[in-house]
Length: 503
Image 1 (cartoon, rainbow, N blue to C red):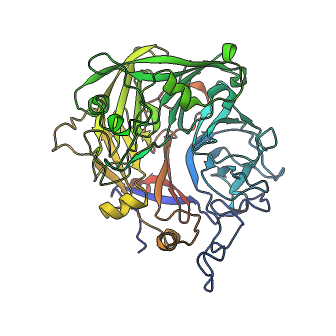
Image 2 (cartoon, one colour):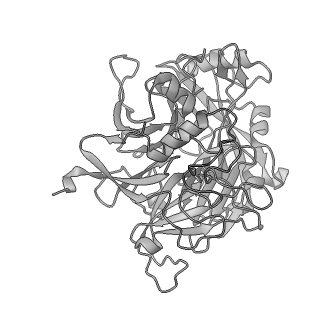
Image 3 (spheres, helix red, strand yellow):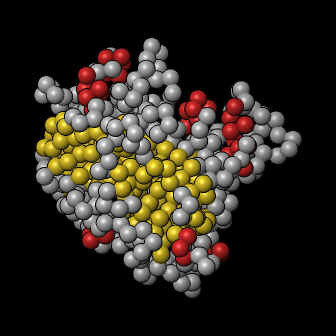
């Protein structure tokens, strides 16, 4: 059944965009914020599952990037679009005329009226190809570009200008083809990338082989990423000093490895180092398989690390990583081997240091796990939201939640538990979709239950001083705002506010 979202009692939320909100400059295929124009928004009463195209493809707006900008333009040259904007790529959607995925980049104009509320910024790349499906985003103040990541076999990194219409460039010849999601920029202009590449499923353990890596790109010129640079992968050493690496074909050995156990053991600090896997000066700029290069170089695979952020106040020396795990309550990996996800802290003397150490902050379980997006609320508290997926929703009889993880807490103590700030609900459209998805052989193309995504705490400063991690957040004060998106279903983006502002 449908059920509302529930926030901590001191908070409330308002809608800033809904899936059916029209784009001010639609195309034949892309007409609204969350639905493509390839079918009706709800299945018609006489639709036959499996035979009729019963529902429009959901476009799934994903990670949010908030910016305060002057002199922004749009399709209407006479309109003042204001100064407050929320950008997002879309994770799914329809197919273009050539059969390739048709994604797009949107800008929510937070100061605008209904007719100008959402601008379609781009639906193609500068080479003329359709805009890809996008998961992650951030702003690079040195290159003056939005950085956009995409998962899957054709995933990678793209950059987009802020002006309208946005010019989008493909950077896969520099960072490779990879299932990238998390993307952040440090003060040196280095681009940090977190990969969500899933992994082979093992029938015996009911777990996924660790298959995803953490990368960083040191550009030749931080003001122009198209000039290339050096891509490195993170390598973790176990307590014996041996690299934790991917073993092709040895699923159980990797799932239940000593390294995975140590990575998910409280109190252990494991040494790390960065390993070079691609240098455009030597290797050229032809697209390459980043995941394969990471494995060949001895990078350490993690359990679907989807996103990472720098801890504010640390001088960009601490990088917090959220991993999803196996999305299966029956995984044999359990909590001890990261089956339910985890939060890790990578610490280095400087963001450009070649070595460091990694430690477990929080080990997921069936109640708190499947971690995906994260954003800092304060110097010590990070908001982490779940992406459990249909199977784990059903197995645990629980929808997604958002948790407050305190980096100073001792979660090795079973009495110390994260605080829930958001209990995700299920909107009407997601309830319909979940029912259609459960039917056998329908060919239904959309997801079912809602997912919490795009949690974002920012003051919108587009300068280098405004890099995420540079300042300690003060939500609801000094220009800091909080956003999240209830993905799937109606695809609604919310702003979270303090109840103290109410009369």
